[in-house]
Amino acid sequence: GAVVSQHPSRVICKSGTSVKIECRSLDFQATTMFWYRQFPKQSLMLMATSNEGSKATYEQGVEKDKFLINHASLTLSTLTVTSAHPEDSSFYICSARGTPSNQPQHFGDGTRLSIL
Amino acid sequence: TQLLEQSPQFLSIQEGENLTVYCNSSSVFSSLQWYRQEPGEGPVLLVTVVTGGEVKKLKRLTFQFGDARKDSSLHITAAQPGDTGLYLCAGSQRYSSNTGKLIFGQGTTLQVKP
Image (cartoon, rainbow over all chains, first blue to last red; front, side, top):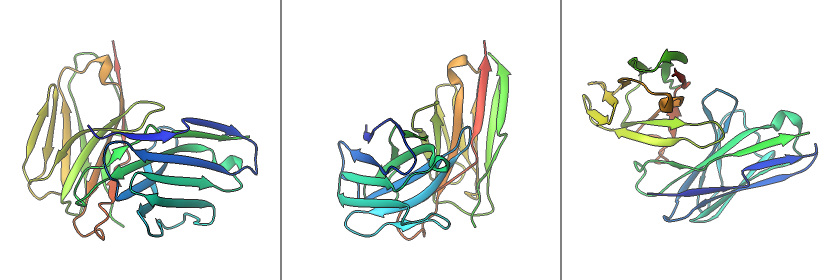
């Protein structure tokens, strides 16, 4: 089945650091990738939708200058948390989908981000 | 705002018991997916239902899509400790700007005690 690889799986860093998370589709072309944030024992909150070669669409309340998304190829999207602070600590998950738009999303294994 | 109300949010049962999780909305969905997620991992797709009234079975799990495509249920028969996890329903609407964006329910944390 479709595989999505997310890296790193865990990051611990100091406040003020910028952190980049990668999301790769390993065996299909991901025309659209999604970035989610998840708090403990809660559901996934969509942060942004990214289409290859175009600017990401951010959900209401998500700071686009804080969470930079790049989707430069059909197999790679990156999320950069800029100048991270403790309140940015969370579980970040990406998903990827091919075409057409009714194809299911395949999820990565998430990145646990801890800001000290 | 489209909402997908999932219930119950927490469920703790004994091994061998049956349970049902519900997802309800006032909106129509073109498809609905059910996922299972374990701590520290991403959600894993269990099933996709697309036709009103559709019923799909996956071993001891039975998934149903409402006739009007506004609601869905997940029924687990004779639950086992290995069924423990977070269950998520997610709906897709046909006219969501062709992105296939999913609307997630709040999730159901299931604990099955041996």
